[in-house]
Image 1: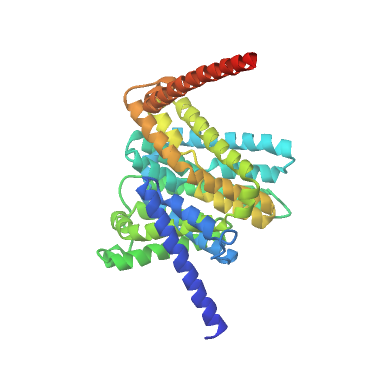
Image 2: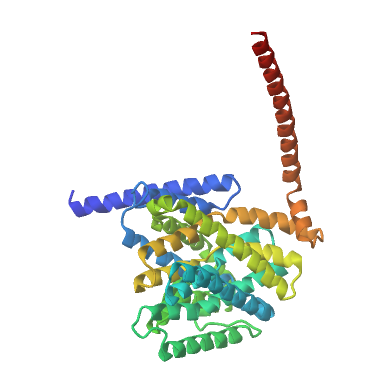
Length: 444
């Protein structure tokens, strides 16, 4: 067997092993009533180049991750309704703007202390501000709020964030040039946002778009899948030619298909593809994480991840409440949007490629993004419990905590009381032993 044939066979064997272990871990987490994506990330982390080293080609992994982001966002775009977004346009835009502004303020504080440049401060602020559309949709589905007012608000904010990605990516690309944020960059941002606004306005009108070839491909699932993917890649390539992210072009393509007469059939036939893409994307995220960096900076990574998730939760709830929403909407919606999103991987990769982020900053960003997604099951559980408390008409935060975690607090009090009784008995025995020892000494 030739060397090339042997290497190809080895690569196929490696991929088979990684896929098998990732699926088994995904099933294990499903057995524990947790999202399988956590298992996919952990499988990639353990089996990647800095783990057991079964997969070593980092460049191939990056291409896999970029492809996963592109197609995943295309399918997410197909799931989103522009008309639902228009109904919550004002609060969604205000909340998204507040999220971005707050994230930038936080990174400015860190940047001034640590001596970061303004480009690094802006880029990391953008990375933190963006939430995960895929994870948010999953959480909303888990708590049965996808079609409710809570779901409409959260999805509206996600769409507003996705719109904000346009200037973010253009600015991130401009950071790597000698001119920086030049008048041409500002003009490109204005044109891109303006065109996107016109597209949303057009798609928000009543009625569905009927594509010219609809009659030819209706009731042909195989052709619909190929046509949808071809449209996705064409839109991605078109955005790339105009200096924008291909992933964003794929998202726009998904939004357009979502407003055509083929939407229902396209979503139905692409569901198996979506499952595969979710697997590929989150597995590649785990493969990209440098395990040595995480181990050497474990406290830093965990502190940043939990700090970001906690701060985003508090900020989200505050901003939603500030727009006049009720507590029973603000709390679950704020929890659902607490993690960092898929576009953040794209922003971090652009920053590394342009030299705005050094390798350590990139590894830290990647680790924090992945960990925020990994701990999202905790937020799913919290969202469920707080949602149940909110449905009972509880509007006070302390009362919500008490009602939500009442059983755990009761058990904790029981255990505390038991420990207190044991400690009291132990102190009695110790005092008795001391008295006996003292008597023995006096007798001697």
